[in-house]
Amino acid sequence: MGIGRQYKASTHTRLINMFVGLCAKTESWPHVLFDPGYRVELVERTINMQSGSKISPDVVAVSEDLSHAIVADCKSGNNVSAEQDERYGKLKPGDLAHYVAVRGPGGLKHAVCYVDSSANHDRLARHTRFPFITFGPNFVEGHGSFGQPQIDKKLSVPTVQEGMRVPDSFYPFAPDDEDDEVAPHVLRGLVLYVAERKGKARHPIADRGAHERILELVHPHAGAMSSRHRTRLVDRIKKMTNMLLSNEQDLRELVHGIGRGEEGTATMQDFSTACARLIKEHSHGNK
Image (cartoon, helix red, strand yellow):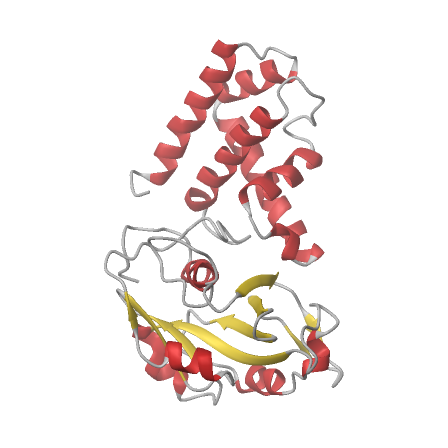
């Protein structure tokens, strides 16, 4: 998408990171939603509506200060489905009350929006009446009304920031992302998991309990996900871990040694070094 350094994750994963980054305080990324109090509350959650329909937004961010939610669907392609757009139009404030806390005496208001890139925006905008948050090479801007004057004003003009670097840690990878994108995050998770459990009882690296903990260590918003999406990510971590241990004899022997309690300084250093080497290999020097 032309922003900052190369980043190999799918465009959809990048857009999730870019939107979530707006709700965080980071130096290398605009924080236009963080300032008015928006925080991520739901990620990849299906919302059952009173109408009987369902929607599956990528992210729901809520501002307690404004008693307002932004229901975001990230669009990496060129089309907005009329059927999907119609379902989003049926979302009522009461539907969200079952998933996030209702704030303020007037209840929680919301805006549905699509998140896209400037390269695709004109084509996407023809198919919907909902507002957009659009990312360009060094800017972010809104199109349409979010039902909150403060947000409309903030997003009505581009927020320009030189040297914007797409964040990759808020939503590090999706279940369907390529191996080379997933591997570095899983390896970092292995290092964190082993360090966290040093000298304590731990699940074997091949055990699902370890994979679930790795997810929590590398996916900051794992707790905001549906159980179904968490399961898909844990399965992806399991697959990647098994592949790495099958292909890398040195790493496999170190993991087995650590599992037997061989946690001396040299062993732990060798393990960290092996993981760092593999991270570099899978990243191809692009990260």
